[in-house]
Image (cartoon, rainbow, N blue to C red; front, top):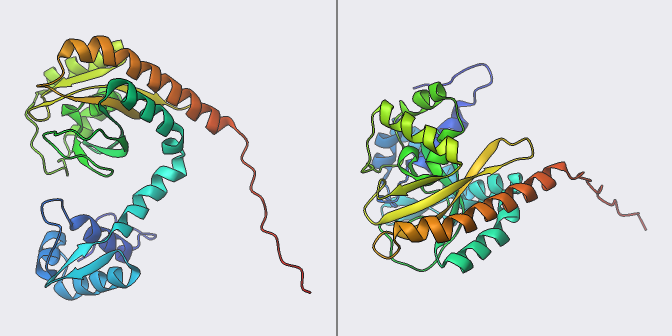
Length: 273
């Protein structure tokens, strides 16, 4: 059946291929052909052809009687991050922030009602939820997401939050519109956000915005702590100043990167001997 968004320039085969890739979930790394067909709504012959094509390209491999993604899929996300230059700019600042706080630090961006992690420097600690590049959580219940949502007009936030989350996680905090509007007003006024076990038990974090040269919020960065180990006072009084400093430095460096002239060196053509 035709996929949504069909138009004169819409490539349905590409859309179907991407749907198959995103059908694989953390709790279901190996999927049968039937699983993939049922999850995507594709006919079995179509799902089979796509899976075999992705296998030939190296993005999928056969595992027993099913299929699973290969690490090559990460190239798709890495290409996005590299195209922005954000990771190269942020990495030394994140590493320094982790060293100074002894906590994991991450950068995320908004994708519909979810945040998606695009960069992370982790400390080997036991946490309630596993996080890696590409992990998504409901935005409103995370400090990273609150910062990103607070940068948008309220009506746009309402439209975004009306969409279903694709994270597969039911957050502990389920506010009504009056509650989240009040929360985002406070975040907008003070310039940073905090969550205290609103996403899941044990997760406490504080986040700040990352901006481009025009002042537009392009991402958010956080310090994540375990609630049983790190009191709120430590997060606010010790971690927050370090986080705000790092966010300012990353934003300034990214603005300088944007403003720098980019010169492409033409390839040298060998001279025939």
